[in-house]
Image (cartoon, rainbow, N blue to C red):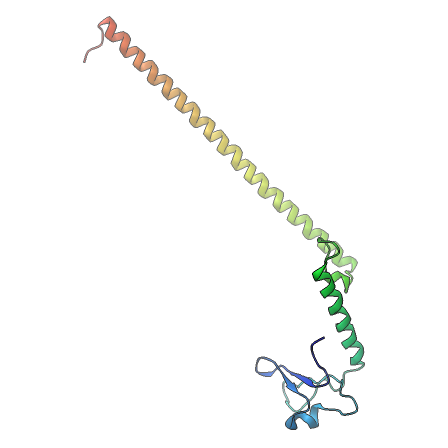
Length: 162
């Protein structure tokens, strides 16, 4: 929408840039007074060559890009469904693309469930570890109490020596 095909040409040399089609040094090669809307693209091997001069029905391509841009812009500001692809509003997916997307979703779902399973197993093993630790503490406490009880009995009976 903002690109002015009538006044601006495209170069891919030196990292890419736009240039004025009507500039003195470019006018002869890139400006066509009868067809100002024609695409002007500099040939990277020959800066005086216009590879866009032979483009056919460029005005239809320009309108298609403009229309697609407006559709995408409308969906970005107010998406129809959050799970749908915005790009699919201008380029409908093929059967192969839909099948591939289903396979990818299936793989992601399996990976997520495996992660959950691993997390659950870790939680279960951690829970068992905690139970084991508690049991060992209880056994230790019980043994300590038994030893303490045994010492007190021996003292009372006189069989305990210091």
